[in-house]
Length: 254
Image (cartoon, rainbow, N blue to C red; front, side):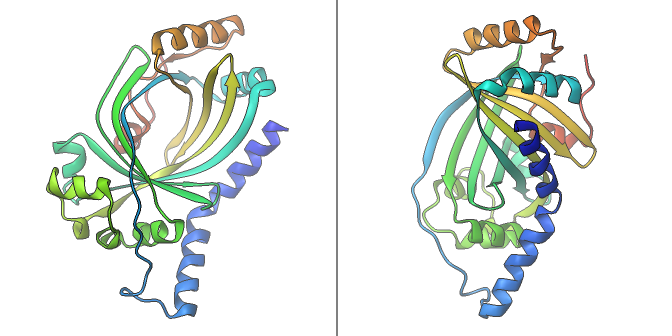
């Protein structure tokens, strides 16, 4: 059943960009909306001072499928995600501030989250990164994705305020860099929340299992034991998905 859900998710995601944007534009045209009448949204931030995750890379679809089968009794849900990134044309956020501004759409626009990640460090399969997240109305998020200057119309955003004040980026100068799609299967296993990812880049597919934990060394040992006991090859993730996206190629399998 989980495999059927995963394949359905992949089929749905293939058409998500065009369909979602077309539906949004059609809605705007029919309703007579224009630049001055799109909704403005106020909200408060949900702050994660430091996100700490175990990140283990799987070599191929066979390893991903085998682990999916092993974890199937613990499966709780599957998310379809689309991730889009924004920066200045000169990439000042990424290059000068080691930061990434991201919009994530869940399950065909049922939810969207604006996030700012900065100062990433990944070593030995454990990732540490400063993260701040805020919910954003999906219709406004789609408008910002299509025309990034609309970020300047979003009110009371701690993330966007930091981008402007601390990083010195004018919101109306942001551009969309593109992004990638992800099918994330979530599992509750031995007190850990495991996220099994199948990430579709334009240049290939990456497979990974992640686990956010305040005891990452213990969680990593548990995951390594699980994979070794089931004969599933893995390696420590060396870079983030955003870094893979920017590089334009999948990391080598070690």
